[in-house]
Length: 141
Image (cartoon, rainbow, N blue to C red; front, top):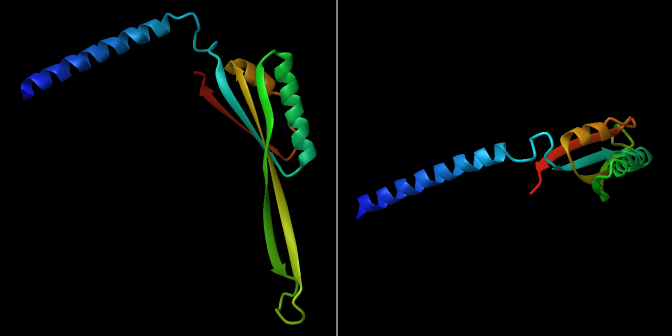
């Protein structure tokens, strides 16, 4: 009985390998090549300055709309507030007075459905100082 199961398993594996090789052949001969494949692209923008961040977002979106791409965003994520509270007096003597410092980090997401070449053209705009851009590419389903 075990040998029959092993034989069945071997046949199944051979069938799968045959199926995978045929599918890869079909994908290679398909109409779309690798360069022309439409990708799902997520652009993440972070900055401490809201004006610069919004300017870069609007420039990216305008460029994508001009190229007639499917765009969603910018999605405004919650602002991270990094706080530090410290004593004013270095020696620790005197009245207990405190300084409170805060740095706000703003984040935006823009999603595109486009080819990789188009994204290179769109992201070639001048980016304001202090704005960090992160581009992640995922295959579209």
